[in-house]
Length: 563
Image 1 (spheres, rainbow, N blue to C red):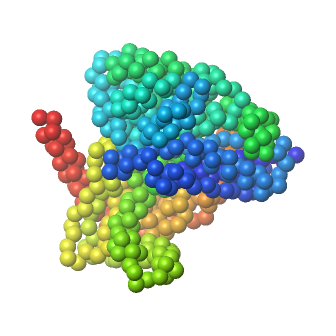
Image 2 (cartoon, rainbow, N blue to C red):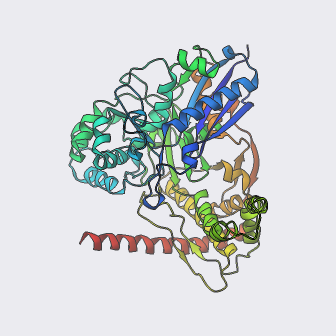
Image 3 (cartoon, rainbow, N blue to C red):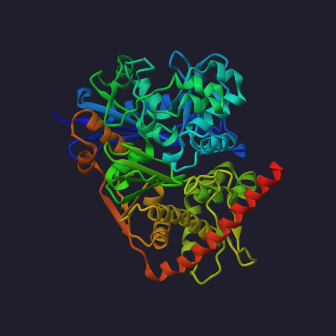
C-alpha cells in the first residue's frame, strides 16, 4: 500500500500543507491559506514592534489546507499515515485550564495580549535585558549558556514576562503557555491532558532555556527572582521534551472527521520551520542551511563528540536533537532579510499609494491595472538596475538591523543605518546597499561559527529569496566566498515536517535516512566570482565599522537615559 504524509508549515503570513509520497518525497498536491486577521493588521502595532496573531487564523488555515490536499489528491484516507506541524518561533500562546487559547475566552476576544506573540514581536526588550542580567549575576547556573549566552526579546520567557506585567487580567486567566507548534499539535490529537502532552525539544531547547544538564527548564528559584509568576508557571509547563520523530498522539475523532482522515493517522511532535527546512534540504554535518525569507534562520548539526562541552557564543542555541535526533542542532539567523527589501519597497511606494492611487484622473480600472504592473515590475526593475552598478561606483553602506540583530550576539535595540549618501545616490544604489547589507549580516554569522570551531564545507539556500533572486544569491556567494546550492523545493520546511511524520509513522527508521530518500534535490549552484570577492571583502570592513559606530551610539544613549 502506498503511504503518504502531510507536512504543515506555518509561516508569518500564511500556512501551507503538502501531501508527500513517502517512497521518494514527491509532492502530490499543496495548498496555501493566508491569515485573514493578520492581513487586516489586527492586534499589531509596528511602531511599538508589537506583532500578534489570532489563533483562529491558524485553525482556519489548518482545516482549509489539509482538507484541500486530501480531497484534491484523491488518495484514500487510510494511506495518510502521519502529520507533522512546523511553525515560527518563539511564538507563545496563553492557554486556559481547559487547554484553549485565551483569545477564545469571554472578555479576551479582541485583547492583543491574549493572542499569540509572534516571533518578530520585540516588545520584551526590557525583560530580555533583565533575564540576561540575572543569569550573569545571580550566583547560580547560567541558564543562557546553551542559548548563545544572550537571551533575546524574541523568545519565550521574555515575552511572557512582558505580557503578565502589562496585563493583569491575562496573567490571572492564563493557566499555562504553549509554543505555536505545541498548541497546534495538541489541538489535533486525542490526548487532552496538558501535563502529559509531549512538548517540542526544538522549541524548548532553543527558546525556553531547557537543557538536560539542569533537568529541564530553568529552576523555580531563578524564575521566581524575575517574577514569582514565572516560578509558579513552571509547575504548569513541562519537564521532559521530545524530538519530532516521536509520535505525540493519534488524530482525534473530531479532527479526523473534519479533515477527511482516520484516527490511525499519527501526529508527530511539533517543531520550528527552520529546523524542518534544514531536514527538507538534506542537512548533514558541516553543512550550513540558510532559510531565507522575511528573516533568516541558519541551521547546522554536529555530533556530540565533535562539539564536546564547548558552547557556541552569540547564536540562538545548541540543542541535542532539535534538528536530527542524536545530533546537536545549532541555530543562528538574521531578524530581517527579505523584510529589509520589503521595507524599502514600502518606502518608495508611498507616493504611488497616496498620490497616484488616490488620483481622480485615473479610472478605478486603470488604477488596478497600474497597481498590478507596478507590483510585478517593482523589485525586478530595481534589481536589474542595481545589478548593473559596477563595484567601482560609489554605493552607500547600509546595516541590515532594521528589526534588530538576532545573531551574532542578539541585540534587538539596534537600528539600521545608511552612510555614504550623495546627490548621485539613486534608488538602485540604495537597493544594492541593502542587498549588500543582508549578505554582510550573513557573513558575520558564518564568521562567528567558524571562529568558534564549527567547520562549514557547504552552504544550502532554501526559501523564496533563494529561488527567486539570482542577484541576491550571487552577491551572497561572493560575500561568503563559498559556493551556495539552492534547494529545488518551494516548500522545504513543509517537506521537512513531512519527513519527520514519515519517521514517526514508522515508514523510515531515522531522520537522516528519510531525509536522504525524501529530501529536496538542488536546482542551482552559485559560485564566488573571485574578482568581486576581493571588492566585497573591502566593503565588508566598512559595514563592520558602521556597525561598531551604531552599536556604540545606541549604548551611549542607553547609558544617558539610565543616568
